[in-house]
Image 1 (cartoon, rainbow, N blue to C red):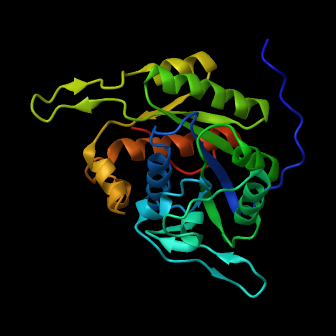
Image 2 (image 1 turned 135 degrees about the vertical axis):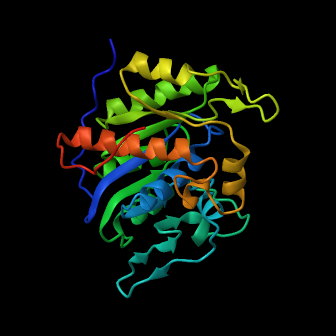
Length: 278
C-alpha cells in the first residue's frame, strides 16, 4: 500500500502568478533544463506572459541557455527585478554568482535563497511561472512545495531504465505532498539518421509512456534527439525562440500545448488558454 499523502503547511500562491509549474527529473542528465527553457519560450511565443525561475542552485545553466549575463537590479525595498530575456522574465543564481565559483551550501542556505526567489522577486502579472528544479528529491524541492502553491509538475525523463527508476521516485514525491503531476515528457526519445532517414532508438523508446501509464499520468510529449536543440542551448539561442516552424521546435511546442491543456483540465474549467494539440 502506498504511503498516505503527508499533511503540509498552508501554501500561498505568488501574487500575480496564475500557474506555477515545476519542471523536475529524478536524475540529472535527462535534459530537464533544456525542456524548461524551451517550454517557457514556447509559451511566450504562443502569446502568454511567462517567467522562468532557475532553482537549480548548484547547476544554474538557464542564463547560458538564454544567452544572458545581465545581473538583476534591486528596488529600494530590497525586492529583486527579474531579467528580461527573449520575452521571458528570468531569475537565476547564475546571474548573482557568475563564473566558475561553486555554491557550497547546506540546506538552510538553499531554503533562504529559494524563498527569496519566490517571495522577493517582482514577477508582476504572469500566466505561467516555470521553475527549473534541480534533479532528485532534496531540499530545494521540499522548500518549493512547502513555500508556495504549485499548480502542477512536469517530470522529464529519457527512455533508459536507469532514468525511469528515478522518475518513479519523483512522481511518488509529488503525490505524497499533494502536487498534481501534469505528466511525463520523454526527452531524447529517438534519433532520425540523416543518411537513411530512419529512426534509431539510442536510449530506447516509449518506456517513458509505459511508466506514465503505470502511474496513471499523461504523456505530455516525446522530444527527439536533434543536434539543433543542443546547439541552440549551447549558443543561447534555444530552438523554441525561433517559433513553432523553427528547425527542431515542433515537438517542444507540442509539449507546451499539452501542458496548457493539462493545466486547464486541473483547474476544472473550460476558460483556460485556447489550445489545440496536434
